[in-house]
Image 1 (cartoon, helix red, strand yellow):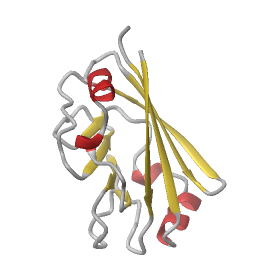
Image 2 (image 1 turned 180 degrees about the vertical axis):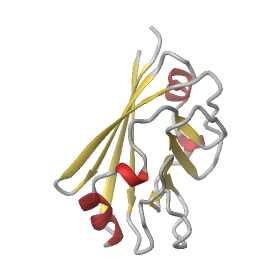
Image 3 (image 1 turned 180 degrees about the horizontal axis):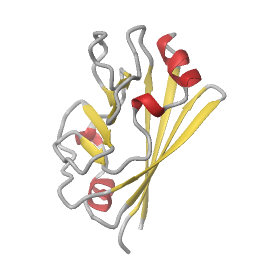
Length: 142
């Protein structure tokens, strides 16, 4: 089973993209420089807004998530895994993790990118407030 979600958000002057274990997008519109994992704000969906079909598919240890971040001409695809403990109940945030840690904000684990590994031209565009489209494509159990 394949389920796709699309999220629209944008950058902010305080985006740093320096976190070594996660990256995050949020529905919140303000950002302090301390939020070095946050790469975009003003998202039109948080974890709790994702469809029941997506939530069911990603909450499986065998699920694979392809996340494509597109900002103008810049595009990067992140490969991550689902996990049986994923609940996607947080109202505002979505966090991709390099580790296996799961909480209400976790969308995927064992991600092959973190904020610090994203292309610096993407981070620079987001620091200028550019729009970001996030395409989530999960391959879950049949």
